[in-house]
Every structure is written in structure tokens, then in C-alpha cells.
Image (tube, rainbow, N blue to C red; front, side, top):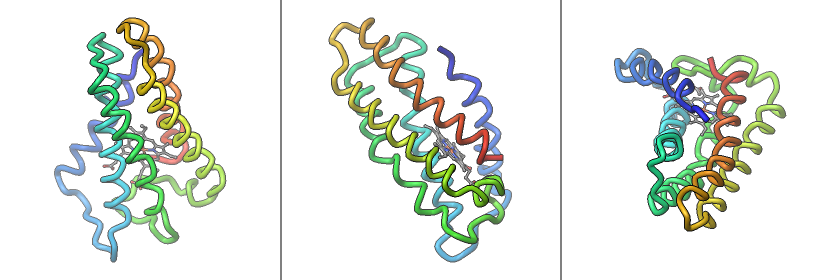
Length: 154
Ligand code: HEC
């Protein structure tokens, strides 16, 4: 299983942000908030992928990342309010045209994250078995990032 392409694609986003291209200056800065929430999600999600990909699995830290991701999974959504499609947003216009489909993507993500957390909590003792089980639980979360980005992120 390879998770690399997704994250290589994400890198330019960081670089743009780091250069401070466009700043969110609106009241409450909802766009900046949701982008920060997604970056935090990536920060707990990516290390798990590395552990599973490179056979560097450590049960305790994997569990911690899964737990952290579960804590962060609800954070971005409240910042997708009405009239929040303006630079520096990278959301597609489509997101605002099909709110129900977007909500369904979100719900699927939340469920997949919960399943991953549960799998991490109950992972087999034996590392090889654990990695196998956790790969199976990690994949749906990854698929959900991809699926939502494909439709709703530029
Ligand atoms: C339900 C849809 C959805 C899901 C699920 C989702 N994302 Fe996103 N993500 C978005 C949208 C929309 C944006 C663009 C936000 C904006 O700029 O308005 C985004 C932006 C991002 C960004 C860029 C933030 C920035 O600094 O501009 C990162 C990183 C990211 N997502 C990571 C992830 C990861 C990792 C996952 C899965 C673990 C994930 N996302 C799951 C919809 C989603």
C-alpha cells in the first residue's frame, strides 16, 4: 500500500502557505481555521502511514496518533459556513452546490477514523499481524481524504 503520492501532492500547499500568499482577513478567519484544522489532521495521519509503510510500527505511538486523529476529526467542518468561499480557500465551488454529498463524505471520514482508532486500541500484540490489521483500517481513511479532495479541493 502506498500513501506517498497524496502527500507529495500536498507539499506545494504548505509552501504556498509558508510564503504567505493570501491571508484570511475576514472576521473569525474561517478559511484559515479550517486549513489549520486539516494540517493538524495530516500531522497525526501521516506518521501512521509511515509506520505501516516502512514496517516501523510502534504500538504505543501508533495508538497515540490514532487517538489524536479521532480528537481532530470534527474540527474543520464548523468552518465551512455560508459565504466562506474566498481566497485563500482551496475548496471547489462544487462543495457549496452539493452540501449533502459533502456532508456524506465528511460522515464517511468520521466513521473511518473511529474504526481506525478502535483497531489501534485492539491491535494484535504481534507486530506483523498488527500492521496487517491496521493497514486494513488505515486504507479507508486514506481513501476518504482522497475522495473528498478529488471533488471538493482544488
Ligand atoms: C469531507 C471532505 C474532506 C475530507 C474527508 C478530508 N479533507 Fe482535507 N480538505 C478538504 C477541503 C475542502 C480542503 C480545502 C479547504 C479550503 O482551503 O477551503 C482540504 C484541505 C486540506 C489540506 C490543506 C490545508 C491548507 O493548509 O490549505 C490538507 C493538508 C488536508 N486537507 C489533509 C487532509 C487529510 C490528511 C485528510 C484525511 C486524513 C483529509 N484532508 C480529509 C476536504 C476534506
